[in-house]
Image (cartoon, rainbow, N blue to C red):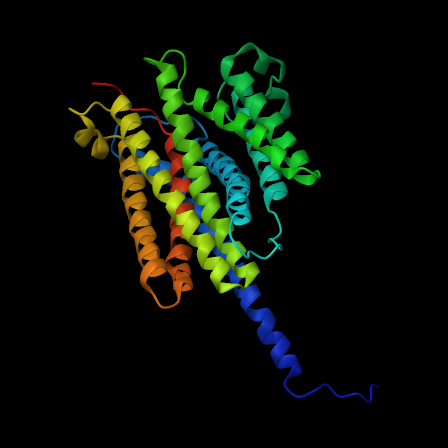
Length: 335
């Protein structure tokens, strides 16, 4: 029996110190689970009364693509913001723990799942015997799927190495593979479409992952002046990224849905409905970004901009989930 009594309130203090972190973790898990419902349940809602037929396992494919896109955003955003942080005068040398290895592992699993779908003729495999691994080398989609699997594996190894910045090259390979996959050779002018997707996906990953890591860095630093400077530098680049995302998104939409039919297809096709939902979400994100920018420039405490920025991160996570769903739905017919 111990003769040392705990100091009154000590356990309460330690408990209260732990509670916010536990509550934050529960909130993150809840948001992740909620975001997973979008690709899983979204296809049935988007396809309702459209007369279109979705590919088998569209919900699972959409979920895997959502994980793959998120796995791109996290490490690219870290590399981007770390570069910005090095240019901030008086910035603390410490940095938050990297999530890149975990993102690479998640991306590897997602890419492996997508490769297994391609290996069974774009059907969901029911057993390992149905997967024709050798057949992946015989098709364009199969080779791109294998490239993504190997690229995420290489990115994970680079993230764990002494030079984590080298992971930018395998991550770039994933972006290129996704851009090529989204525009098959049977499409009209596929190289132009791939170029648009390449810019769109890169800017979206830097915007989403960069804001997440910027907020983590601000919390880790605990230095208001340096944090405000970092957030300001990110905001200036994010404005350019948003402009590029908007321009490439509009151009890509017009390529798939001509201007004469786009208004009708936005409500009568699954792709159009999902695209409309994504546009509205991006508009909401832009409003939150503007709100954060105003607070950063005019508020007595610039770090009050973190509140709308956190909401912006959550909204961007939903946009990533909707984007994963969008890539799994049938492309509308050009009328």
